[in-house]
Length: 124
Image (cartoon, rainbow, N blue to C red; front, side, top):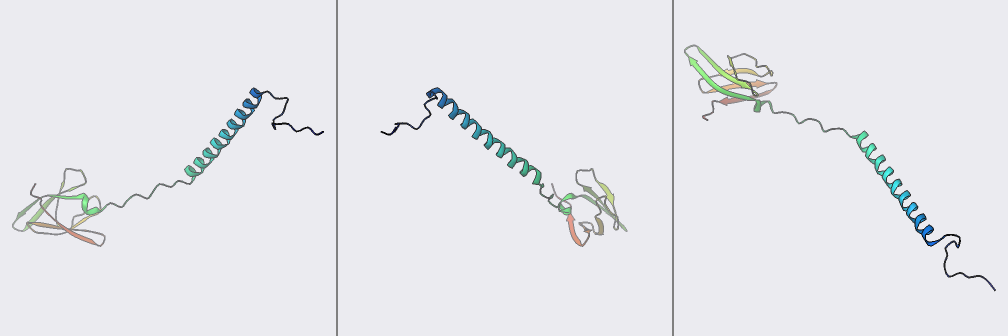
């Protein structure tokens, strides 16, 4: 006669022991998964490179606040960014490298590198 048990469990372990071993195995799997996720996160952070800053359109930083024209002289009040403005003449360079290349009583032309644009006094 051959012994053929109905269950495949170890007869020296109680049902509570089996539950405890299953719980320990589950906790070990959770710990492995936690460590794996931490390693992935460390790798992601180590390889992270912030995106390059977006280039600022220099033309949007210039605000023409006013133009004064008297016979023989035209000057303009130009604000760069959030400053209060400065009085400029033809040929002057602003602090951001923009040059005033031409003026008339209504419009001022600016040049930065190879970009030329004009501004007129806003009515607001």
